[in-house]
Image 1: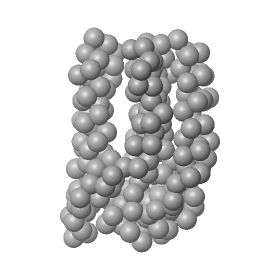
Image 2: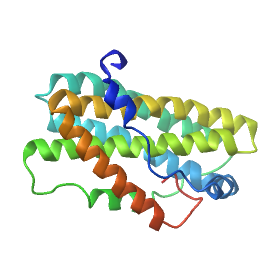
Image 3: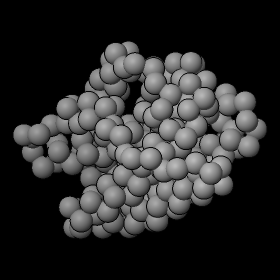
Image 4: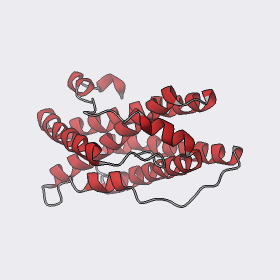
Length: 204
């Protein structure tokens, strides 16, 4: 898929606001909570990709490209579970994802099918992009050398995921339309991040 990634896609994926550096320190202190939340994020990603395949079964490229992502995300879920078990930590209950719920408010609910599809792709791209940025923070800022390496693997994987969703959007929708709407999503997410409390018990 990387070979068909357009130049402008590579150029527009920058998040507008970096994660507050304090978040890494808070996350390391609350390792059981952050691993639990991480596990559920991976689970939700797998289930969302399954849902997208079901709703867009007529889109051959989407089905082809998202199918292995389901397997990969579920594999990540199992990796985080194994890490919890190794540390004698428990998988807690899933938490309400305030970040994603607020992103959902920006989706076009009454637009055309194409507009709704575009927002579904860009929503996923943004969640994956922020996850990638958070994993990068953990891979560089945690004191535990092993955990830095652990999150480096996830960072590298998520980097490919968020570009995939942009590329799929470009495949089915005019690239200028994708670029304009992506810029609006990025601006909205910036404002959301400015208003959010810095919490170390969750990935987003």
